[in-house]
Length: 317
Image 1 (tube, rainbow, N blue to C red):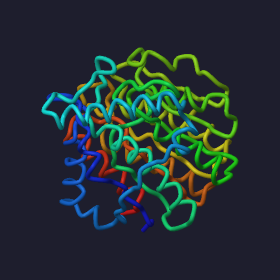
Image 2: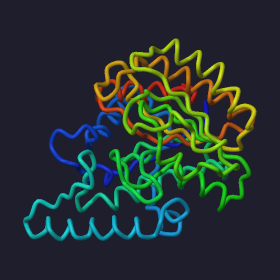
Image 3: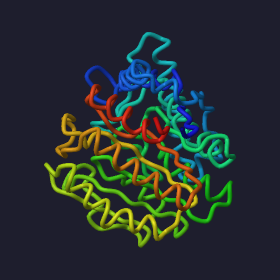
Image 4: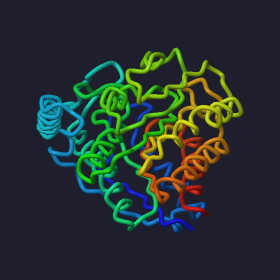
């Protein structure tokens, strides 16, 4: 059994983008309930993250972007306290309330704390069940339900603060991780590999922005076996050749066939298979060190089952 950390915080549920929004607090409840009922929660070490600090955020984001989100969240908290609506839309998909900034700090902080614990040898790997997600947040813009790029921050943190020479990001969300790419493109110490539905939001990724990117766009209705072949023949060889000292996963489960926000055909067994293959690479090159962070996944039942499958492989149960 691997020593697997499970990082989550109740305050991540306080960020709320309004009734009917798919990126809802209930996502974390569905995951927690499933892991409790199946006993997987007993096989992991539960930890509460600390909020990321300004210096850590600035590894990946511009100072003005951070200040704007903080100021908006404080203003919305005051508005809520005065009996107002306390919500502000940044774009048609992405809005904030007074708790958003703190939740986003915890989401980024979970990735950082997990990197610290894994690199210290306290844990072999970790999963961060936090929200908001991060892989669409660019250096200077919040978008696509994301405010800070949690995985990109963690990658920069591992490189800059821990002095690693090679960190890899595996992104298997149904949407292209344009924010992670924006921040890591051109940094030869980082490799980003992933598949995603294309053409699809955010309508990027067909042309990678750097030689350190392996983007594998696939058409709608691609099923699990075709994805597995792509992972085996293209993604894993590139990952192996890079020989990462740490692997970060942007774990989006919205490529599940039951998820209405995408049109790919993966099931839980596909996520378990992909996780196992990535774990094999981590064991060959990185002493098993993996930090996985929740991104998409909006059908609550499919999300919970998929996270369970992902965690079972990470924890070896």
